[in-house]
Amino acid sequence: MTTDGAPAVETAGVLVDGFDALLLDLDGVVYVGPGAVAHAVESIAAAVARGVVAAYVTNNAARPPSVVADHLRELGLHVEDADVVTSAQAAAREVAARVPASSRVLAVGGPGVAEALRACGLEPVTLASEGPAAVLMGYGPDVSWRELAQASYAVGAGALFVATNTDLTIPTAEGIAPGNGTLVAAVSAATGRQPIVAGKPFAPLMRESVERVRARAPLVVGDRLDTDVEAGHASGIPSLLVLTGVTDVGALLAAERHRRPTYLAADLRGLLAAPDVLALEQIDGDVADDGLADLRDGCRRAWSAQDEGRVDPTTPDDVRRWSADVVAALTC
Ligand SMILES: [Mg+2]
Image (cartoon, rainbow, N blue to C red; front, side, top):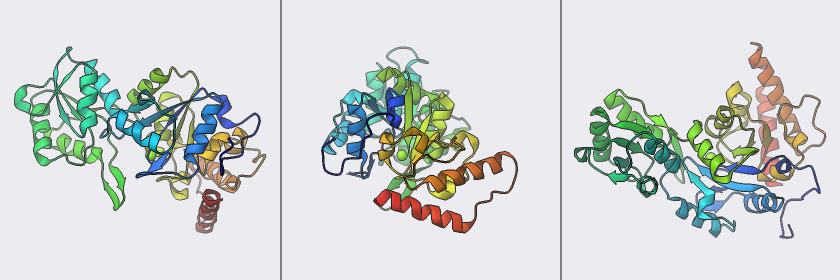
């Protein structure tokens, strides 16, 4: 990279060199709202320049892939529409595998849901009285009680019930808002039925992404333990957690085994750092310090205490100090 502000790229032995594909989460990793996360665009470009394929994998089903790709291109990334994999696409494939071709499917959510169904040869409809074979629920900011009622009628009548994702919250500029999981929970509560879920942490979205880019050695990159990192565990894929999104030091230290990332970095510059600096499993101390060595060491101690049923030795002062380390690492 020659662009001002580009991360320093070592000549060999950086994290991405061990992988052939990045399965990148979007919110809190590549962008927050309309704007790019600091260092994200140039770090991804530098990673791709080293030969890795970037797939953009999102639980958010509201926007079609082409709209997401337009957003990413506006941020300066070189992205094809097919590089974007949404939970709506993975969910539509789950539906298509279980109902006859051309079936009617009641679509609840943003335009991304209906578009994904059409791409799988299914017919999106809006009323239970149209006799849908399945219901597909995805996030949409304009989803109404009437649509939830139609979904409940169809699910109650025996339609296959599929959800793009079950994230309980969605971050907005004004704060934390109900995510698709709360809407799905309303229909589950009304009908007593649970959906098949396509999105992270479940396997269908990871499977769709791996197939899309023909990955043999993928790396999940995300900001959430309960979706991105857990999806990696569920699919046998290593993960890099970045601290530019929702996960804070306290949540990381308390992570259960199935939600512990393989690697930890402040932001996407970690893609271009030495893997032994970033690895959380390493026990001999970091060979170099990117500002988070003490936090990684704290994670190892907290997690081994958790696994062995001992009291976590972490003190509130530790959490404050490591949180300050994160802020310093993010702003350097
Ligand atoms: Mg995210």
